[in-house]
Image (cartoon, rainbow, N blue to C red; front, side, top):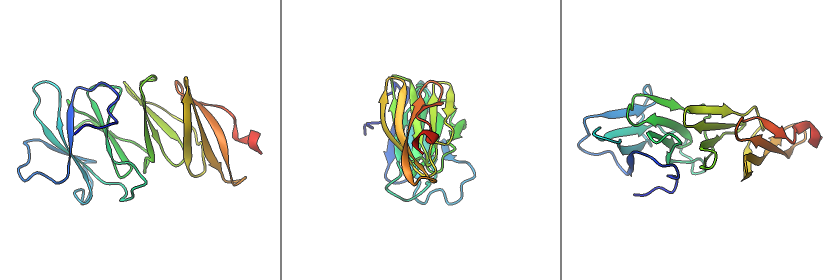
Length: 192
């Protein structure tokens, strides 16, 4: 099965399973490790890493059973990393060392954007954005919204979007520098 989110070159193969295999592979990993009742609604992915490493079953705990939040598999800027999102809970796994993973801080992640030109995987949460690069987490923006970040477009190295301002009860535009994660304008005070 091919995934449209695989814009970055990657060294692994992955298949989203509709059900857990009857015979499990010799290596199985659960993300996060301490999840309770992880199988209920979990995203099950069979992963074949690069080289001679054998396949492993990756079980990703479900965040929310809501079609509004993403679920799927994405390639990452680092070829050996895989990003899986299960009901808005996002995980980045090193496929060569599957015990090494990062659970993205936003719960839930509301949108995942692939930015190949900037070599970033971008996660949008309710209040901010987080960028994942070749070396891991690259930056996280300051708070952009009281509730709900809406990405409009990427122009060059700027991301344009809107965030909800609680005081004015209106959407306020923002621009984020994709190299630094800093808000470059317009600032919330300029809308009041």
